[in-house]
Image 1: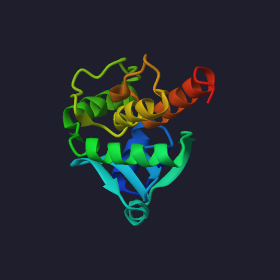
Image 2 (image 1 turned 45 degrees about the vertical axis):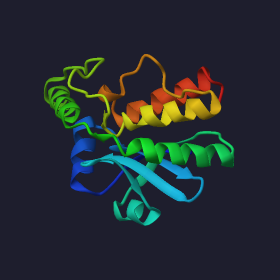
Image 3 (image 1 turned 90 degrees about the vertical axis):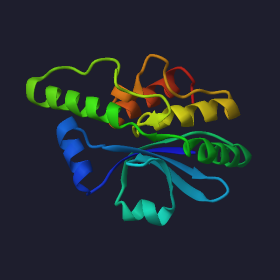
Image 4 (image 1 turned 135 degrees about the horizontal axis):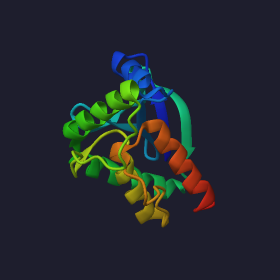
Length: 174
């Protein structure tokens, strides 16, 4: 299981990176268990992607986090993620609030709040899709890889990468 923090040449990615002033615009969860598969939160919700679809999106991984797991654990995580992801739609209200706050920060220097009041449960932005991955990973390995003090609905993909890698390195010793 691997977390990919990516960018793409698509317009949405370019606008987001410009607004955030960061090199990453999206998060993708990758599995290499039964077969190679990716998941990302897109307009219609958490969606599986084949490697070909991943390449068609033009994703370029800027940062990666490898989550240690046996082949059996990876296969189980992939199955669970697939079936649980089907019920997760895209968090449009959460995205609108996040975009509004990005504009405030970009043009007026206003810092992001610690929480996104418009975020909805069972709906995901790309960073929020990491909650599902972390919960499944915790069930299988005993390690939750997301720090408890972070609201991923109000966290940029690049900030999520740095927070998760620091937490795994310092707290979990992974």
